[in-house]
Image (cartoon, rainbow, N blue to C red; front, side, top):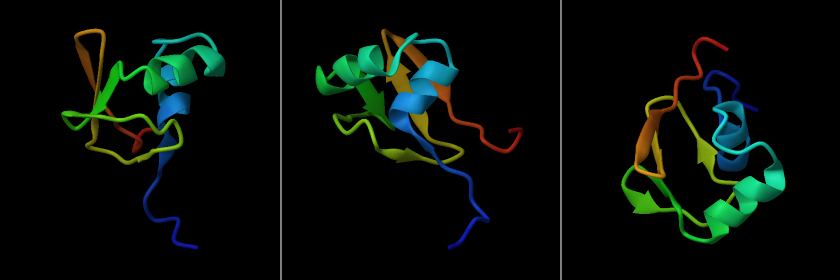
Length: 69
C-alpha cells in the first residue's frame, strides 16, 4: 500500500473541521447535496480527499491540507 500521500474521507474531514459534530450529520449533509468537492456536488461520504482538494459547504470553502497532521 502506498502511504506517501495522506487521505481523509469526506465525512471525517467535515467532522475534523467542525462543520458537523457527528458522522450522521455529515452523512445527511453529503447525501443531501450540500457539499461540493472541487466545485462539484459530492454525495459519497467515503470520497477520499487529498491535500489541495477544496470542500465547499454552506458558502464556506475549506482547503484540505493533510501535510501538517
